[in-house]
Amino acid sequence: MKYIKLYILFFLMIFAVTGCTTDDLKDDVNGLKDRVTLIEEQVKLLNDNLAVIAYILDTQNKTISEVKNVTDNGEVTQKKIVLSDGTELTLTIGKPGTINEPEVTVGEDKMWYINGEPTGVIAIGEPGKNGEGYPEFRVQDGDWQVRFGDGEWKPVTGGENVADGSLGDQFFVKAEVVDDNFVVTMTDGMVHTLPIVADLACAIDKTSIGLDEEGFWVIEKDTRVEVLVKITGENPQVTYPQGWRATLSELETADDKGNNYKLYIYAPAATIKTMNTRAAANNTSDITVQVQKGSLWAVDKIKVKTPKELNTNEGKYNDGQAIRVGGLEITRELYGDIKAVPADGKLTEGGVYFISENGKSLIYDLPISGVTDLIILPNTEEITDIKLTVTKQIYLNRTFVCQNVALLNKVVNQDSFHYPLRVMGETGVNIVMDHCKIENLVVTKGFAMGGASKATLDNFIITNSDIEIAMGGSGFYLMTQMGSKNVNVENNLIYNSSETDVLEAKICNSNLLTIENLNLASNTLIDIESSGTSVYGLIRGTVTNATVKNNLYWLSKAKKGAFFFSGNASTVANLNVGNNYGYSSSGKQLRMFQSAAINPDIELVADLFATFDKSTGTFVPKDEYKAYGAQR
Image 1 (cartoon, rainbow, N blue to C red):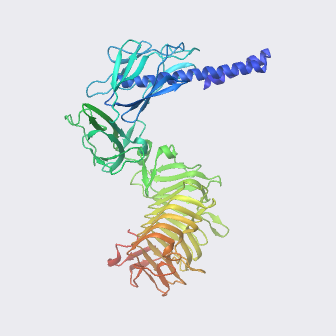
Image 2: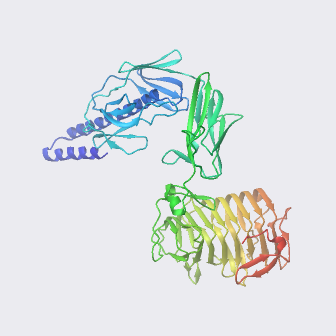
Image 3: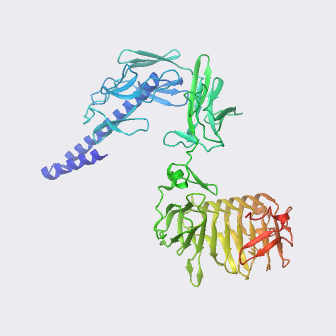
């Protein structure tokens, strides 16, 4: 804290002027530490007890499940109160202290008052309407500050210059369990009796979901989500806002947290205008689960809403919504503030860029220090033409995403070109290309190479894109020297535009590495032969789960043959295949695995294309095969 530094500096100045002993200085610093610790303990005690007060004043249909004693040297010093929604409160009883903490009271108007000043915040709820929270305090720069919920911290009137003193409590005289009740006696003489119901619980497990800054679960329109709930009692019920729907389903067995129900929430397909109906009254955002035992109820709630309807990706991103590209979520929370697009197009740093101009040209020419992330996205659906020229390798540490981008590889390597992308991060790395064109890739290289030892990508995703290999030769690697948790190559045209053969082509060159999940679907592959000097497949490595469907694979003049996978079927633990068609004009092998045929395998069709033009990258199947390969 700032005031700690000021006090230490003050002590050092005294030492320099008066020449006090080292022991004196240690005593002063230790005294300061003790004072800071004392104030921190008082702040915690005050806030903990206020949480108990808030519950006593407004239980919000939560019951007490258990009260536990906390002892110190055999003396009970605190009560731990466990509520029916799993919340745990701490009550500390002590004689009034001498630290000048704020005085907190509730007025006849049911509002919180601090040092006699009204706050305007309701402490005690009414039927159908809960209270509005309770104050939380802190000491900042030696003065008391207060806030409600996640609101702004504000100075407390009369809360200046926190002084030394002893710990104390201003609220409670006694708290004890009497039969099946928790009885609390306040300093003003009022006694509160709260029932303890051990076998009544209702707790929504919010640990597995992400809430926004206002505590809402933001759910996409027309989608279903689910969350676990712990329910003990009778007659469980769920209520929900107008336009939404929610149901409870009991599980066969509870998990290790005791969650024994699943709550399904269905978001509306369109924005709902709230009506003044009885069903919608005071329930525009709460999904409420409740369960009873006799006349008592336990209740828990979760606030839900759909994303704001914004017209630009930039607006959605700044609002905290996720932008999804190829299945990967791009959020401001993870990737930070938007970067301004340079007028001259020359990128000076990594980050997230939203492009609002068709035909905008960007240039990547950064040094090998590289970028953590580089994300280039259209700002609206109308932006379909973004150009990115890469003149130096992109040294990537985490995430590279492009959508509607034509990437031109101009990374010079002696008399040819290099990989445009070099992955330096070992974990948590994502590469996503969606609706892109990747141009001027060359043999002996490819698109993305591993720069870190045995890197494993989280995602390698190329969808709805055209990839041109501009020259023939041996060795082409779309992704090399890396494993991946997820590889999705779908609805792409990958073709050799030259008349010279491309040999030893690999979509994933992951030798001695693992690909956990692989999807190769609806791709058109033209004159990229997986074999060369040696016989290999387009996928080299161990694969756990693979789907290979609806692909077209054509070889005009194969040397040795082509295969989707190196080795035999044992290299893929779980394989789902079907509707793969192709042809090898030279009669060389074309099938799923290098070592042996399977059923179903690639079905050979000599007369596959109605239009076949490598100069323009136009490959149109005949009518009976138009449902297969890249859909354009």
